[in-house]
Length: 245
Image (cartoon, rainbow, N blue to C red; front, top):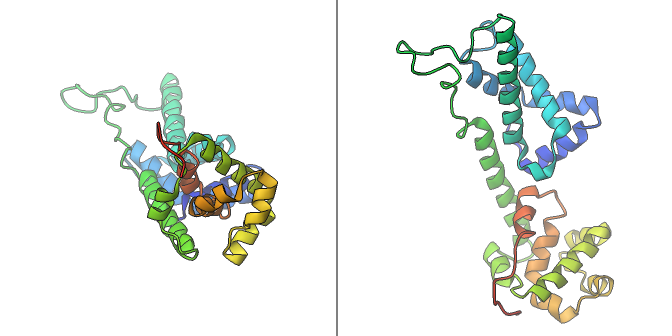
């Protein structure tokens, strides 16, 4: 079952402090963990590579504990953690003479080592899951925007272009995030709580009305854990030399 990235992040945050939640998350992503192990060992875990699968599971758990949103999407982060942990394992085992060296020749000519032959993971299952998560999140967010009579093109056209106007919109967002009841009110009524937001943020109502569609979009992005969407919206900067609208 493919889950959107923002729901994965919520699960990861819960799993950091709840061992049962961590066990559940690991169980849900055993297919992913197994796949990353197979890509590294070139063999199924049942064929003498049970230790590697256990190490991969440990690496996945360590990724849960160390993950922060600033590190990017979780699944690619976990995939790197698994790969790095397995490489460390092989290097340790080599020193004890218990495993074939990854630097041993992998072909008859001896031109490539086993480490060189490890597959490129840029097209991995992790990246596929992230792409799928992005599409799912965009579709879900688009449907919610449509409920307000707003499209993605409306949001793009309605973005503030002047730094002072963008700063004003950010004040509105900051105030709304500090008062979650206003975000709930937006979702429940389908209307921007203009009076409360203007009074609380000190932003002129006329400015808010000119950028209502943008404000609705960016506030909605904080109502349902839209990690991917809000990451893009919050990075929008005014065009150089742009004029406020």
